[in-house]
Length: 360
Ligand SMILES: Cc1cc2nc3c(=O)[nH]c(=O)nc-3n(C[C@H](O)[C@H](O)[C@H](O)COP(=O)(O)O)c2cc1C
Image 1 (cartoon, rainbow, N blue to C red):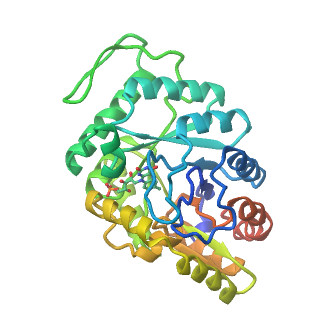
Image 2: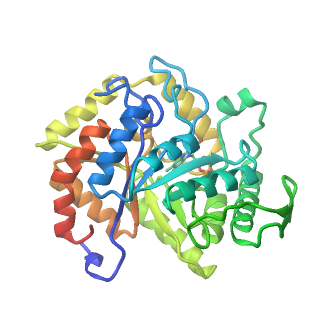
Image 3: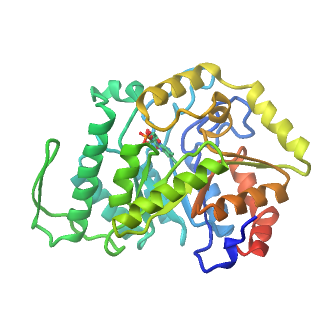
């Protein structure tokens, strides 16, 4: 195995793909704490993550549930208001919100973002997603437009955010088929300079083109470790051609037990109690509307939102984490089965191994 970990490189950024929605991230009724979506538990998880020296927390933005016996994601905490409460109760961890481009006007998003950056003294980040779910958007009368146009609109959206956050108040103008900004004025300015961290979670050609030109982080979901290597290289290469540097992160499903067989038994329990109806509602919508989820199996969605499974003993999991870091991945927003307990255990079980490896 290559040992890029000895070269000078930023340490691995660790975060959580937070359970701010009910039954989110694993479509199964096998769940140690079905109420983990509540604010009270999210705050406990956030504090445990801070105690474990994690770098960031990342939510899911959902407006409606996906049916089935769990009505997956139906109880969901909206991600700007969620971030506001968590940021004011934490001290050092970065917390993202996720905006669906067609739902909030960019001036409103820029204003909310500046506010959150002030509340947190520069610890807020934004994931800009184009929006794929007809199930959610039909409730609002919002049309899911074609993929390419959707990303052109997202590109305009990010350019507007950057203009509003960086140009002299009252001077920013922008016109495109979707927005007309005249004398854009958003004050206070964000604390982060030049602007808060901007990410996009998409893996298609359209998404890669956009992130490499405009985003700080690219959140991707490769189906396995080899694909991760290729995708990271591709995105970083494109950014380099645009004279930019970009960071990549992915959401693995991380599960460890004393023995490998125990860990896989746990995974089997998740699959045995899989919520097939919710899963199909989710996967069919995403398959039609995305340009990057063609290699994911239903099983991958069932155990961790389509993320790479990292299942085994703590040593095996640490080794998989090292491998993906060696493939160029800069960060992981981990999906856990039992978020609070796993966050506490990660600190004692896996962090020391990663520290010994020199990647944390
Ligand atoms: C890490 C990650 C987080 C995402 N978060 C959300 C979200 O909160 N809400 C949402 O509707 N879609 C979310 N998505 C879906 C993406 O916005 C996008 O539709 C999907 O990755 C397909 O990308 P593509 O259009 O480039 O193929 C997320 C995707 C990834 C990889």
